[in-house]
Length: 347
Image (tube, rainbow, N blue to C red; front, side, top):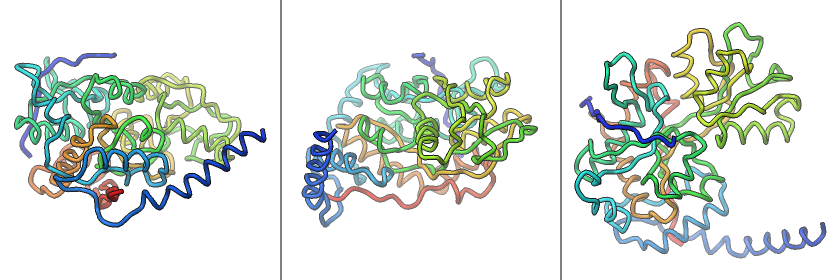
């Protein structure tokens, strides 16, 4: 695989009335639903910008399969891409929010010397997008963003997109737009090898579990505890800005377990031989590239890039998986490659 590395400085960011209203809303949505569902695929360079955005907004409101709530691929330029290309001089770069601490996803290898470069699966994808839009794979400005700042960074315009193991879900679709999925994963438990915890089961009763603030893991655990699928006395009080901080809490003995995406958990287990994955993934989720809700042209372009990346057997998805993830997730990528994408229909 052609090496793509970038030496660049990271910029840190471091009663009754209610029931009546609810019924009325339910009837309203039932009447509007046929207007959203119609025949014919949306897409192609001539797809209407405003029309497609309206379709995406309604789809988010009626979200059932969040990984399918994205726009069809297109190579057409638009206002968002024009703005990126219009940057002058050293500022003519794609600004991408990433992680710098997720082993083999977005990280600096401490063994690579003084000026360690960002590398990993997500970093490969960011370079691929920059190459397509700006004609230069290295025309990327990386910004390190904590887990709980991913949506705000997009909404505030600090970044053009986030490529940071970000799960597509319905709540996030209210704030940002997503590409089609580029990776399949699921929530999984990480605990010390000597722990009596056996998985996402009754062995978590009375245990303290660490999650990242604003993560899918936290919202899933809170809902499961409310619904009785997780022990009522499981302690979810430990949340951290960055998911990797949970591993530190686990190593210090401050928590009993960590819940995060299985792909990230596998990387963390590879970093610390005293911990291991416990049990199987208990959800199915997908990573996507996140962008502003009105950046329809950029969403369509990224979806086209993803289709090309997955089809490229020389320098594409498979090559990046083999390079970065096979050591921690195994040589067979079948469980990690997402299904063929589905796109929104024209309204």
